Every structure is written in structure tokens, then in C-alpha cells.
Length: 305
Image (spheres, rainbow, N blue to C red):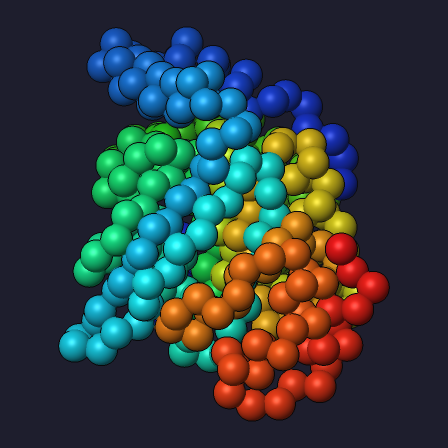
């Protein structure tokens, strides 16, 4: 079995900001690439300069998704403001991963409106370097000799282009992302030799090695023990604050979201609740969404924001 088939489909301080990396990419690029880089920078810079932090970076209005004759998402409406941390919860099969794929432009809604950084997701082809995605599960052969550095470099594919070699800006971006997640010194370590928590951090570095403004994380702490989970969440909190990241975090662990999320959306095909953790997790309406009893849900909502 070879490296990297993604299913459900993609610390020390940072030495330089992502914008500096982009500037170096500009200097190293040819004339044709410079025109493409300039277009990419203008579209997103235009969005933030025109609207600032007031306009949400993600907006959904009345979104429906139908797959193989079955309704997967029904009339979902919410927005995510710049720099916010949104937890996305719901039972298995509720449509959470489908929703992330809608935001990535991988699935087209049957109806409704979706805007990511002010654009239809289908227009994001030249803006994907602003969106980091960590899938629910990455399957790989632990004996395949691919290093941490190689895994993170895969995240630069949309910047490098097809059949091209990484430039100096790409190599520096990868090294800085590895340092940022606390894996400095392990660049050449085979990914299969890392602990589960370290592997998750490597995949997070892969999602961050661009000019990432939005992070879409699909159950990133699943399978981690308590210590590794805490380490990952502390790291994510720091990176979000340093880089001003907007985060959508899919999880079944409501206790984690009660502590870290600014807001929570609960879906089970349709959207049942959207509000602050204390409002959502302490609500009787969760029983309707999950269609069963979860005593720990009510407890998770106490003494939170």
C-alpha cells in the first residue's frame, strides 16, 4: 500500500509571517507565475481591505445538498466571522464532513448560497492556499519511507504547480510550519515512526504551510489520549491567536468544544442549534438533534462561555 490516501474526501514561534513567504514567492517566480500570484493576492487582500473583520469569512444561506437521491443537508444557514473558532457537532452521518466539502468546493449544493472569503467555493481554485484542510482520516503505510518534511511539503502543491520542483520559498514555508507545530528536528523522521499526537501535528503543519486564513479540521483529535489531545488544542489555540485564523472544528468531544470554541453549530441533516457553548451544550434541543439521551452533553454546557 502506497502513501497517502485520504478518506472522507487533503512550539517555537514563527520566524516570518506568511506574507513574507508570499513576497519571496513573488521574487522567485517567472513572469507568468507572477501574474497568477498577483491575482491570488489581490482577490483576498481586496476582500479584507473592503470589509475588514466585520464581514464573515464564511457564509451559508439556505444550503441543501442531495447525494444519490438522498437529502444530506437541509436548509443550513450560518456565518463565521474572521478569527472565530466554531465547533461543529452532530451524530455520525449528520452531514458534517459533507458541509466541509461544500466549503472546499468539492460538493456543489443543490440550492442555497455559499460564500468563502466573499467568493463562491467553485471560484476558489486560485485561492486554495488560503484554506487549510485536515481530513478526518489519513491512511498510509507506516513502513513507506516518507518523512515529516515530505508530508508537509504536500501542502504546498497548489503553490508549486504540476511537475515542478519546490522553490526556496516553498522549502522555507515547510520548515517554518514544522517549527511552528513543535516538530523541529524531526523533519527527516519517517512519519510512521511518530506518535499519534505528533502525526496529527504534522498534518496540521501541512494545512498551515500556505497563507492560511481559514482552517477546516475534521475530527483532528480523534484517537488521541488526553495528554496528546490537550497538547494539540493548546497548540491550535496559540496558532489561531498568532495568525488570526478562522477555524471550523468538527468533533464528537463536546467537552473540548465547551472549553475552546467561541460558538457551536449542531447539525443532523438540518441545523438544530447555533450559539455560544453554554447555550448549545446546556440545551434540551440536543436530544432532538441526537435523537437519544446524552447525559454528558448537559454537563458539558455548565460553567462555560
